Image (tube, rainbow, N blue to C red; front, side, top):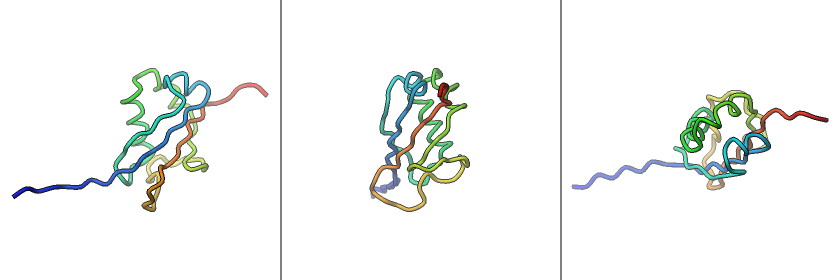
Length: 97
């Protein structure tokens, strides 16, 4: 008898801006995370994919999840199940005016 487990996942489209793109080595990427993943889970996945150079910029960056600032990193990225990817923008502090 074969037992199969299905783990639901979600696609997260991450866009990196300014210094975040430089540190990540890319302007954008898609990551696959378990359904119900939090912003903390996403940051862990980014660090694993992009290495230690991205750590500092992630610590000081703001996250926009589907165009809304995410301050609580422990809530799921998206509560409802939809087929569309979650979009997360990583915005480091900007200088200038």
